[in-house]
Image (cartoon, rainbow, N blue to C red; front, top):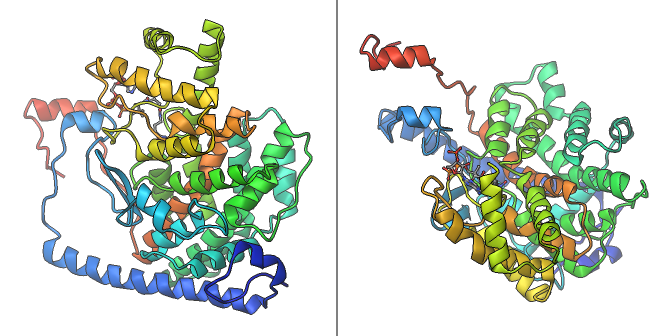
Length: 469
Ligand code: HAX
């Protein structure tokens, strides 16, 4: 048995030389679990007193437009892991992306944050030490075994099946391993829900890179699979299993897995995971549901759509380096055909997404002369003025998906249909940390009220009380 030593100076390169007993890892799991539970108990007590003293405080009002138009701006959820500001973008437990890139633990020799560290931050609520993050890498390595029937289930699908569908089917087949489902079936006390969800969360996150890499190699690399490397961190090993050994790509995966992890609670993948969890569906069922939402083109699938759109643009104008004027013309054509410009706009953000900026900085450092990356930057100059001139579009600025594909293509990952799976692996960190919080805080079944347009009309005619029962 191996992996790590229990000292603060542990590095990824040390892993090869260090053997440790399983019980030490289990003990560390216990430490994270204890820290999480301690935090959750404190917050649960605070919430109890907030509801007791201020439960009737009105925090907003709801208009008819809002219920007909996607519930924008209705504050209706509590999600502890991150908070989105329309101007400043996402903050994870108060830390912005630039702050996290500086403060979170890194792989040895690397300069991008380890997603393990972000997960710890979202789960426990405070920054991890280097040791915490590296130990989490080891815990996930140890729990990453994927049963054979999952691979057999993937193999039962036609290879042409979209990678996101393969991913969701694989997650569903892994549900056989749910501790929560097993313990619930045996008769588990409410007080233990969080504990079983915590265990499932760790197992599921640990196993996702193996599953995603399997789908990638199956679909695009003739089924020539690559065994995990137990010496690498979670994202580095994911890169390795997909067949990318370059340090730059591993660094990109660490950044990618960090910045895509969470975007507060109301986005489709996070909200769906949370909603399904409120029925006490186990984390596998919840996460698979969330991934079905991520697979939509207005959400996570936008990352594949961006690259597709750029390739079509290049083909149409017959050049790999379209000018800003040519891009502008193509944007107008896209709009005139009744399509959206992928990678631009956001339901909440009203500025350039800091996740876009982080990727742009990565591009400037690692590949400033790449023509596709430069095209992404030219699009960034050309698109906002065009979208900004259309009154109905509230945010003409790029979101996270506008940049990611070009960085992947630079390292040779050209199979854009796979990109949303990468997003999904990352998103597990945020939505499952949130699910642990949901169960630890004892959040109940979610059941908002819906109405019919007939009822709305009778409200407007004064025939029915809006606040009636
Ligand atoms: N291109 C063309 N039209 C756009 C647009 C864009 N990029 N962004 C918004 N609009 C349109 C909307 O389609 C809507 O038109 P209709 O009223 O005719 O339906 C109108 O402008 C108002 O939209 P909005 O209020 O500005 O934005 P929404 O909150 O309704 O939608 C979306 C937000 C992200 C769905 C939207 O901006 C969009 O479709 N963008 C392109 C797809 C995309 O990049 N999605 C990824 C978003 C980030 C994410 O979740 N990643 O996973």
